[in-house]
Image 1 (cartoon, rainbow, N blue to C red):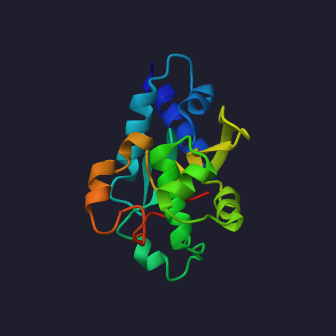
Image 2 (cartoon, rainbow, N blue to C red; image 1 turned 45 degrees about the vertical axis):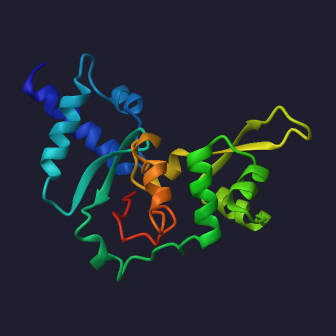
Length: 189
């Protein structure tokens, strides 16, 4: 492949990712690249271009997204409106769904040891952090819940394997998923 074609592929991938508010899947990037393009080489070139800058290219939620450099996020939070944090019960619910998915509402309540309001589930649905994934083959056929790619993107995870090990979470006095979040990278549309 010529240097000119490679440079054009890098520019196309960069523009596509920059224009998207959500992580861009590799399959979508490949659709805009030339035939025989090396996706890994293209992505490495973009990452190298932004290394040490104000934004960086990260692989998250199965795709690629530009995010604010982590060291700059605290300063930007002074001027960029940040969505409200989830309530503790919502974070507990989200952690249970993440580690036990697919899981029913009754199972969430059993694990939490407390009831769960519909408002909590509605909030997680509204934020796109959980989604129904079917029904359990049991009396009443309750809805099964799982996390979404938005959940992965929000927490900067490539996939669920990057969650802390459950044993590590359970031995700590406060779970990393339940503790208040440190300011993280800001997604760029």
